[in-house]
Length: 315
Image 1 (cartoon, one colour):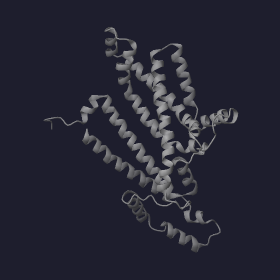
Image 2: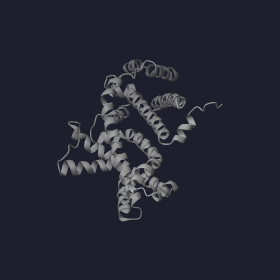
Image 3: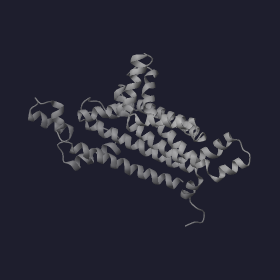
Image 4: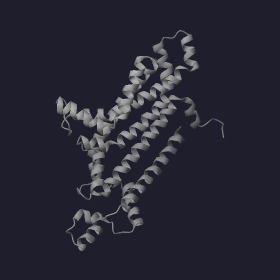
């Protein structure tokens, strides 16, 4: 198992570096002159040339790429924002907890509520409880995050006045963003959990457990649920990566100064250090999530763990 983890960590390094190269190349190829955008249309060519030299964008592509990779992965220096004139690393350190809190809280709701709803629907297959759960799930899946967020603001902030519509003045400010990110995921996980549970319900070991007289609650908890978790974990891991990756929309709607909103500002202002650093962060986070997912597979299914374990006396 240790060899497998080491191998995946090496692949994570390759993936993150590749993402950094792609992000740098895309920003380099974007039309327009960042120095001219920063100085404005009234700036002279001399000032623009001096600014380009200050930013280091007057160098050849390969030199710029080398300097960027060395600074990022060897010196752990993400650079300084061209617009805000502040270190990107310090800004990310302040914004990162907010983005992770919203994303992880939303995923916790996804897993708990979505899985329970899916199990509830599967156990009542063909009944009104099953139909009602799936109808609600389809409604939530069909609604984009930004639409749900605006509806929640309209109802709970403007009409009822129960929750703040934007900002992070208190913990209450996180309620609407977390719900906005969680609803679609809850619906997806509910459908996935239902499908997985229905497959397990018809398995032979479930029939055997019932024949032995075990209670239905025990069968669901000890036999059905662990075996149905494999597809659910796949959906959860992908959903968590999507939640963090989709944070720019939610953070912009609720005016939350997180990594997503920081990325949008960087794109709008052509602030390359911000954009490149945020993309590297998303690549690292997604790679870690995928690694945790694979390890969870091994914990739940001993057969998978055995594939990566070194056999005694084997070749």
